[in-house]
Length: 398
Image 1 (cartoon, rainbow, N blue to C red):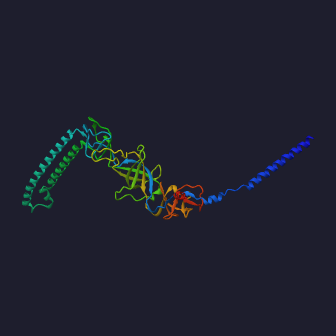
Image 2: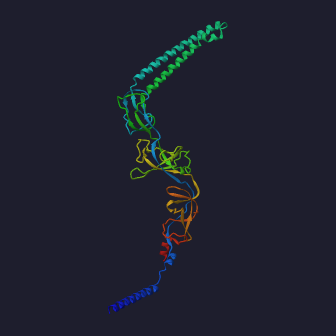
């Protein structure tokens, strides 16, 4: 009896399951289907575009380098002595004009040496004058015996060796005077060129000898920037400026929160690779890097300080008949998306050169093409696209 009841229960459950499955199948077979493919084809993707910038373009080669003075020296005395005066301007950090005195040495010994040299010159000139008188007497004596004197003895009778010696002694004395005057002038040590004092190593009362370091000095008229450039980009580099025109943009990103910009000119390619990076090096010149005013020689707040690490944009060679396309709109595998007759046209392009901001394209895009700038998800050749602005106009018209 129990067994019959179990079989009956199983049969009843099976019938219920089969019935439920049939009901579900009928429901799904009669439900309307969503027309997804048709909707995708009919609804265009909204995009934004830019017109192809066709023409002749000058790319920029971005490099990095360190600012340094074009003139830097250790100032040293050329004569020795005690420091008896120090200019109040001779202070580290001061901007000093060329020729302004910095230190004065005790001139006493050099003044004495100059007087001694002048005395020697006076004696030499007197001896020369006396010898000129002897020359007159010797000539008269020679005229009396000229017929009987051998030619070898003529110079001795006319006292020509004595005259040459007197002339030589005058020239030697004159040179000694000039030397003494120069050494006296060197007791006043002046600024060799307009620049800035970085350090001072001498003070009042210091005993100096030739070769002692007095100060570290840099010129402020021009600074240099040595930038490294990959060898692959060296062939694209434009020739150094020959007309003095600034053709390099220098950006100082370390000047606080505000980026400052300066102008410079490429003056030389250094024909030796950097030992660390194995890159080529170029030399850039910046005029008036401190922005000094002619009136008070105050350093500008926009000054380019020596030692600053800067970014430099160098001019490359002109690329003729090309499209200048922002690099973010150059797609994978060097392709570009172009809107043509309301369709997405995926173009393979030939990129001649690319810099930090732009790709320069010679083939694949022509003048008047509309390059899509919008990132779209369904990327396929021939997909429907529409300008966002046109879509807005259509909605307003409706």
